[in-house]
Length: 278
Image (tube, rainbow, N blue to C red; front, side, top):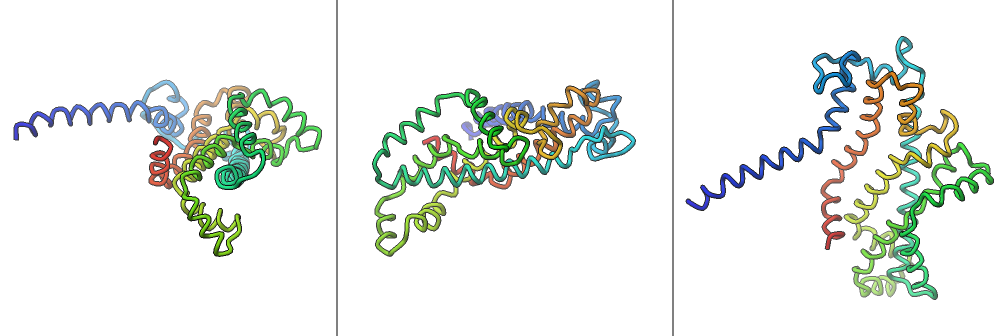
């Protein structure tokens, strides 16, 4: 009983500290949400607004009396299209290359693997000019393809899949080959179902990174037809800089889908992170 009494203050202290840390980490998003619904005369003037309205949200979605006619809804769907297609391509490519590097013997395998590791040390920004010139020369500037194709390969995802697939027993793959399964059948019907946890981790990281990509989208997009949400938010510091409330509403719109995705796949994400930390 004495031990339980001594441990109770420690437990309470840990709960208090954990709660404080959680509040500190989540407060920026709470602030965004509160001020996206705050009256315009209270935005950024009070830590916690006392008056609320939907004016910032109606401004975003085309209220003729307040909106600057910015294509917010179109930008949101552009972001979904670009992020989803780019992430699917990155994962498919990483899945196949990672499997080949982990389970298939071919000449130059070690060179390819070392080249991928070598490339991971280079900052992506040094490729911006060559990629921009390539996109411009083939006529893909200001298009979905121009925004997606240069970002359709993730060396980090290849590295993660390669290391995970190495842990899968070779005997399982050999048994499948004896039953007449092809490499693609083995990959998508045996290996991939065994990789749900790490696939979830890779998917969430890749999707988040592509969803919030600003620099490349800003370079390629030249019209409202291809403008993504993050680019449009960055422009609010310019022509829309006098509307901080709508800027907070747009930031909530940008952040909310990522939170929903994490909540949906939180269990698989935790399982996958346990593998990556081993």
